[in-house]
Length: 166
Image 1: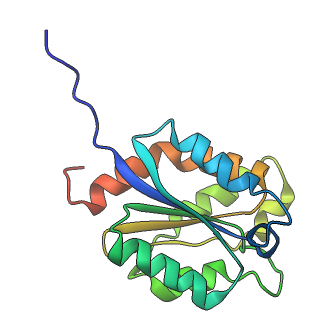
Image 2 (image 1 turned 90 degrees about the vertical axis):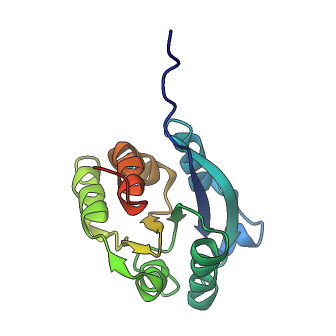
């Protein structure tokens, strides 16, 4: 009897942007939600960090994950709102080679079924080299709703970036 072919496991980084969490004033619940949901996919969390909402630091981390650590998928949470320090989408757009607007569009569309506030998300997604970067909101509830919406498609997106047949 043949063994079933196990799908390739991709490596992910979870990067939480939060001034308060980075100072230890609050627990990072959103990053934990992402890590828990990734267990349902052929994706293992290789790196997890919490950093302040700082444009240059976010860009530096995204570049490090993609270029140095060769992470396949970077999922960020936090910094996608209207606050003065919410700069995650700007940092993401500054470092990507190709934008992937469909991912955040679908996340917003599906999240609108739960909350009208979903339209206020400025999340972005794109590809840097062979790394897919996707922004998620900072709310654990919104992260869960958004990631559940796109999780089944992320492995296929990673297969395409890796040049596999699709």
